[in-house]
Image 1 (tube, rainbow, N blue to C red):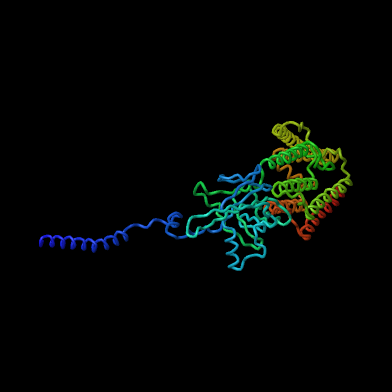
Image 2 (cartoon, rainbow, N blue to C red):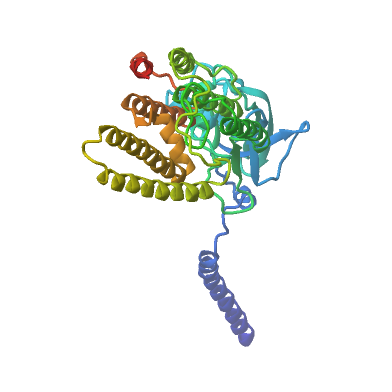
Length: 465
């Protein structure tokens, strides 16, 4: 009996010790178990709600063939296309604007406008929109709203200023940041940034500024017209001064006034087509362009009136060499060099013959002097003609534009430089501002004074002839 009681006491003691030791071991084991990450499922099981996604523009695409093309990383669009953007949690963004007291009076989806490179395009409003909502597990679950909004990349009266900033200094294609916002300047954060390209889900938006097909077609037309004009200028009198003496090569010199008129014609035509290609606007001409065309046309018309009063006949041959100028210039130059040498020898013979004439023979001395003067004139003419045929083509053209009666004139140089400077300013303004330049009345008046000076200086030159 005693032994049985001892066994029961021993069993009770062992059971009590086991219960005492079990509690701290379980507590230590619970403390050492790692806590899982806060995934949606884990947080839902643990009763913790996940963090809502921040409002942002997440995806973009081109709306083609009646559907929103998705899953494309590199998006290419141009003016006139329809695009769509996905906006995450639009209402949360509007609520945050209200808390910051920056919410506009009209803050619905229909009141959004498109932003490109942080530039608001007022007038580019949604053409459609629809929402898609999904939930992320949690207690309570978090809902995320994806609002797809469609925009048409149109350039209207309201969006002209914004498009001018987006499209200026145009290239064929450029990366752009796509976002949305309100007309008061509040823009939503966008994940479509040009410097973000780290994975397959990242998108890059490329805006085609200069459409290749239309540009190529227009360039062919303009270049074809320019080539035809250059051919006509070389072989016809389209911009030549038909009243001026012929050049050493037998052709009439180029007219500065007609050349200026052709310069502004092609510059305006090319600029007008370029602006139409980039902006689609056909009403780009302004009063400054009309004034430039009018001044150049008036200069050419005034020059023609003055030339019509010149005593030199249209068929005047000028100082022509007695060589065939239709041959290559090198052959003509070689023959002129030989003529110069022969003429120099002829002059030396006349000078030696003069030493043999008696001083009392006045008639023989006068005849010898007249013959020497004629030879010297021919020699000077051959030297000038040899120098002309040795020039490159561009130098001969510049001499035609700047010289009057074989003399470089400042009034010609003045109008030439002013035309060149204004032409450079014209091209720079069209490229940087996407608009025809608006020259001040003072600047246009200065160009008009230069043109009037050019025409006025031709009057005494006419009388001198």
